[in-house]
Amino acid sequence: MGRVRDGLRRLRRRLRRIERREQSALRRWIEDTDNMIHASVLLFVPLTIAAVTALANSVPSLSFLLFPPLASGAYTLFADPEGRYASPIRFVAGLTIGAICGWIALVTLGSPGSGDVNAWAAMLAVLLTGGATWALDVEEPSGYSAALLLLVQEAPPTVYVISVAIASTIVAGVYVAWHDTIYENRAEFLYATTGRDDDVLVPMVDGCESIARLGARIASGHDQGRLVLLGIANGPEERHADGEQPESGDGDCVGASDAQRPDPEHSGSPDAERKQPVDAGTVSGGDEDDARGTHGNETPGDDGSEDATHNDPERPAEQAIVDRLEAQADELRDATGTNCQVVVARGSNPATVTRETARETGCDLILAPFHGPDEDGFVTSLFASELDVAAARVDRERWLQVLVPIRSAGDLAHRKVDLARRIAGPAGRVTVAHCIDSETERRKAEAMCANVVDAYEGRFGTLVARADVQEFLGDHAPANDLIVLGASTDRSPVSRMLSPPTYERVHTVDTDLLVVHAGRP
Image 1 (cartoon, rainbow, N blue to C red):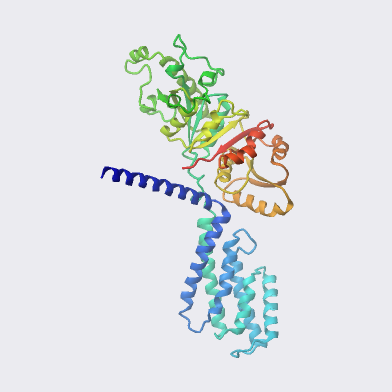
Image 2 (tube, helix red, strand yellow; image 1 turned 30 degrees about the horizontal axis):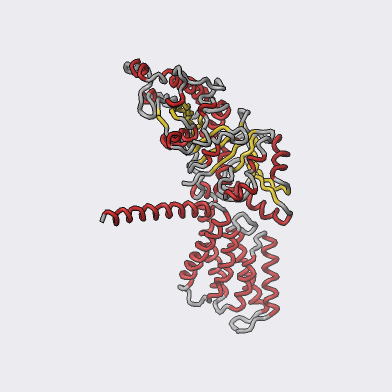
């Protein structure tokens, strides 16, 4: 029985993992605007036509021929929400005017009640519909169908015209409800970027002042955003013989020494993966608990902590890290209004310490320094995380012009655009760009870029260029304060080997860089 229960537990866990993967895949699929529109067409158009048909069945004199123009018009509305014909007023007016023009043609040249269709009446119906809708600027393709169908209807023309007006109004009402509640708010309801990356963790390991400023801009982009500055203290096995910590190469950062960098050959060992949490100072709310460690340990100096300091010689060095980071957190909080906190953790592998601290502190974005080829494996190790990770190489204090090259629509593109608009702020401008190989791809690329930015509020621009992406970024880098690239972690190892990620090829461009890895929940 024990083996059976264990087997059932393993099966249940496996099924849950499969379910989570499928839900994540479906979420990523629906984030593509084209996929969302097609799904909406398959769902809402049939249901709307079924509802209108059910209502129309209460009028026995109406023929089913009323519904083809409704179905084709409804498809036009839903399939291209940003197109010329995606107007509920145009839809209702075009169909109704078409029905009225068909009525005029039937009375003028047709033979009401007969089974024959007069060719001249059909010509007049189309002519009147085209002229009237053109003059009133309500041209609607389905209006021509509504005009011609009246010539073969057995229902009274008055009933037909009124039915077309009512039925088209119902379809337009459903479209307006879908457009305003779902389509226009798809970033809030469907995109995984919304509600994520609110809590930003910055490991203070290398050239961190500008990275922390960038993290504060990202965190302040959401009302409940929080910035956590992580100081990494040396583990016991890395202390010098005299018990002192090695000095940092950068006076503004903690843990930047070579001894604290991950060893690629041992980064996967259990010893390298172990992290020992220590004291943390918090600079955010001014509560009593803020003076205590995030991991529950008391700060040296509280309640007779001299004994604790004597027993743990690392305490003074760790307290120095806390004091330094708290001062920087105060500056960021005053400058940006961001809720800033400080955490100090002890461990031998900075990447592992960073990932574990992000989980323990509830942070959903890790913002790490990036300086080109990742020789120590720190950034590469973070990119293997299921959390969102961004690696930055920044020197500026403000980023008002942000360029976001995208390869395709989807969750990574939306993640990059969301981060870019928060960094740029209300006064900045975000340009979404895509490089094509031939002019035949231009229209599709323009539509893709427009769909990506349309869901967000702010100042956006789109750019489609026929150029190699490396040359394109080199040419446009001087005109932008920041370029946001993808980490290409969604590609297979073979693909990355044959075509290295863009950020590895353009790390020398003359502007700030942000490389984004979209985690998988």
